[in-house]
Image (cartoon, rainbow, N blue to C red; front, side, top):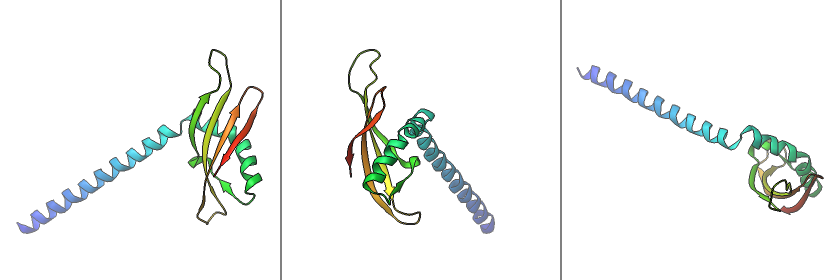
Length: 124
């Protein structure tokens, strides 16, 4: 009888831990998917050449990855219909080399217009 109780307890414990881990994994995946939608990733990809130029100009040895870049703010500079002037603030986590620890965050502010994109502010 004691052996049966231990066996049932072990099965319940194993099942409970498995279900709990599945819920935790699904929660983390959905949070990442909400942050990185197709439009979000496309926006980061379009700003990438300007970010790379600005970061490499100041820190030639540093790199960054778009998967952990974060768009902090998008604001329209002028109000009204058909006004396409924006300030976009993006935070990049920079690093040196593939196996080294992160160097720190760099925040870039972009001026996005129909004529083009310029980096207006570089913060460390």
